[in-house]
Length: 149
Image: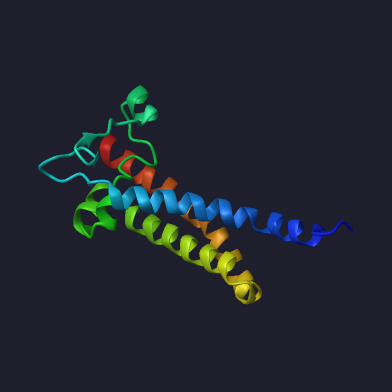
């Protein structure tokens, strides 16, 4: 085995956790630095810059996609839970899931002695994305039924 080979193997094992940590950091950071939409101003902003609506599915079909309204994550991060829920029913749940992923992956990477005890809870957390995806599809179907009814 090459010198340092074991170290590089461990780094490779942590790569998925690092990727998840970076993605969660970007989402949480974006939610915190952005100004969430309000009833008076329905546009997402960063500072004084208004962000354009970028949902291609909605733009092409006129129907909401499963993720339409996820600017509610920003509203929830800023404590406006009522507005968050009115924008997307699962925004707060998604924010909570992203926060848990952030914390677990940060601890897993930063504190090596906690890796073994965290392995099982993290597997459950990672599989939670499947349940979240099912909830998003069911929410989308409900939204379409309410719109088209």
